[in-house]
Image (cartoon, rainbow, N blue to C red):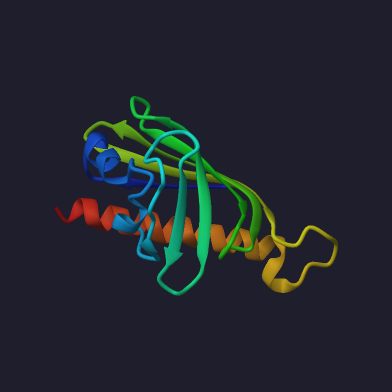
Length: 146
């Protein structure tokens, strides 16, 4: 699944806001803390603390400053009803604007047949979609109000 937003700001400025693995707290409205142990280095682990309670532990798999993108993984969805979650966050220049894409792949939290409603495919898709949409909407608002 993928969510995209076009932001009326240069790609370099948008990338500067989101590129650091520990910066999610600076632009995502649901994240209270997002420290990472090794910055943007591959293998760096960040522990997200959510404002409504709950945590997620994610590991950066690749970081490409020139391409303005990074990918990360979470074996356990933590506060999200997913498993084997991987995601890529990228910024692409579009004239003087930016297109930010947040792409994710995952499985529902409940691996067997007949999952409970809060751990089924729909719950997993809705949870990740909501995270991406709320984050990208807030990023757009922040970058365009400067």
